[in-house]
Length: 193
Image (cartoon, rainbow, N blue to C red):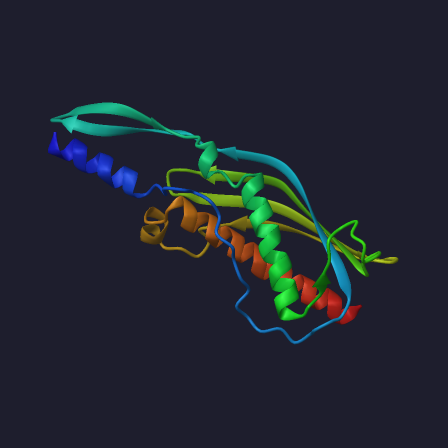
């Protein structure tokens, strides 16, 4: 009985209370700044999560199947995507890379239009891993740039890091990796245009 309680506590400790994404930042330096105005728009796609079954020992050679997931609360859903876009906008403004304005605002047409499409996000509850398949397109007049990103939140983590990651930490890792990749590409494109 004590073993069962201990296993339940271990399983629950890997869960996060809120599961919401916290704002992320870009912590590298950039070499390019610009006074160009931009808009950033979000398109959300499919969000999903896995489920799994494991066996929990409850006695001598006695195992009980335990099912888990999917947990919609912990998926990288539209609200998390909005938080990511808000973080991206804040970082573009803070870094001076682009001056982001509201779409369809009274400030006129932007110099650059950025479209971020979260085509698919997936949550693996066993290790709180996230995969994000995201596409970004930037347009300035006739010039355009596009890239797609496949982000795995646990890439580079050891086994123990994977096993000790909460949903909130997993989301933050995925968002941080996506932010780093996007800002790097935006910087290169702004420098060339």
